[in-house]
Length: 205
Image 1 (spheres, helix red, strand yellow):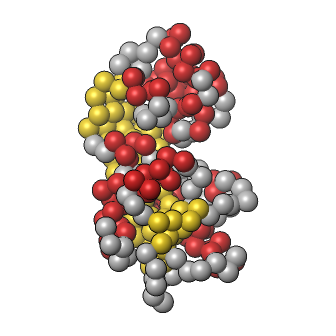
Image 2 (cartoon, helix red, strand yellow):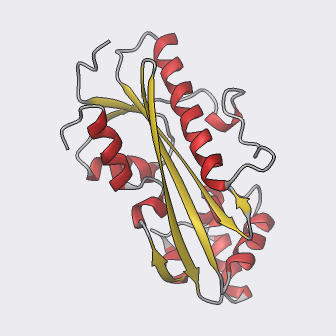
Image 3 (spheres, one colour):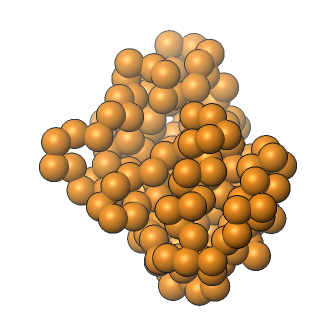
């Protein structure tokens, strides 16, 4: 099976990932799932016993990419590579996903306040039986957040759909005292790793 095109499907609802792919000048078509991928049985977001955070995000990214490829077949869409990604925040060995409620978001931000955590984003690309993936790990240090600031930020609604309850590209950028790693990876799509994968699949970047 030949790729036949330098266009891909993006298996993600994230506007940040769409923006970053556009920044790379990559042509893509979003795959809109009937339900978010994490609600699908094909993508089990439950961390497995003794599963390290890098392995966790890579497993989910690969599962979402395969799920997207299956959707391409079921809907009889033009065969194109499918790209998916998954992001998680890790602190004290615990994975922080997206907050379920405002209280959850506040608790996450209190934990991150004045401390250093890791942001892990895995990217996976699949075409037919071939799938490849890479993981980006960044280290982010927050300044001390006061309770009023946490409540104002959560009230803005910005943290509710983001791993670790913050988006570095938004108002939470002012929380970050230091970052070591990939800024785009913290946003949700590490451009360096993404470019490497797409080149492996023949994309001219």
